[in-house]
Image 1 (tube, rainbow, N blue to C red):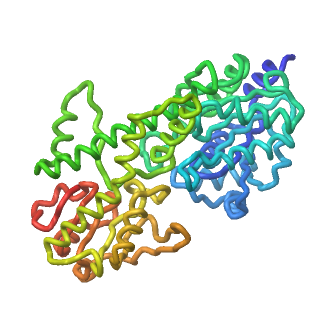
Image 2 (cartoon, rainbow, N blue to C red; image 1 turned 90 degrees about the vertical axis):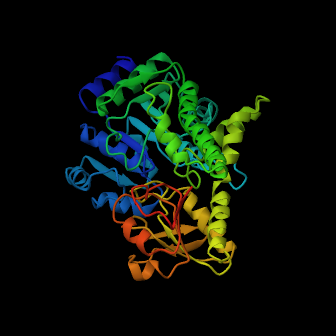
Length: 440
């Protein structure tokens, strides 16, 4: 029996042992889905705290159902370890580790590289390895493949299969989760692509779209997020122009999206946040320079979006000036520090940059976020105030809405009691009396 036939048989009879390297926002939901589909699953993570929580059935990811995790662990279908020697026991490995930017805004692929090195030491014949971490086109073939071959002594395509299938995770999305979001699969060789795609079809309840190579799948993921980056950059620039012209960009967008074709609504804000959109265009721009190509449109949108926290501070200063207050010494309350509404994820949140800039101007800043009670940023720890009330809101010179949570915040109460409100998310649009409210 060939390696392909053997793996297809093991997928069909659910005897595949699955591994997931990295138990974060991408990895843990994927591990849970594999275990739910009937595949014994081992999660690998260098953080002992995560390993301990998983093995105790304690969930720490919003998109995972607590009871499902606890049940899978109790049944022995899901376990976690920091010991990579157990890689030898798995037949399918998904790499789901972070791919951040370094201090020079260049790709930091150290987590991917270190994971590949750790896997290579224990890789056995007949294993499927899939990178899910967002990265630049060429990573799978130029970085991962040589590391796995060198460290294991095995040959890609003959002894193991290697592919790329980009994660598609939207924290807080009530409709699309890991299980039902369509998946793209690219691999080195047709056999590898077919077998890896078959494995995903056995786990997920979604379409699996096969492409000709890992590089196509890697570029596809970059396109998804760069598309959003560029369009958000467009509306952020138009928001600044509309403010100068005395036009509401929010009303303009609402009018434009009545067109049933050829337009998709994107909205302005104090900057970009999350694990993909603020980062991925930098990966592509960095890789493009290798070919002597400058991604001018992409870089222009990145510049606009990166400047939005500063623009937010300028607008905040104007509002305070109208109340005969300066930024220096002003008491400011931030509402929301998560990068999007109704979640506890603050990765790359522009609200953190806004706080940093306010502090630099001499403001006294507090924040309230019912989802993010504490966060760390550039070596500092910050804590949310316990609650907001009319008495508390009245103490501040300015309230800035930097995350548009739709629950657990009484915006009418805020509007009724705040001296001034700067709503960067238009979350207070339904409030009638708007004398003290200014929108981005």
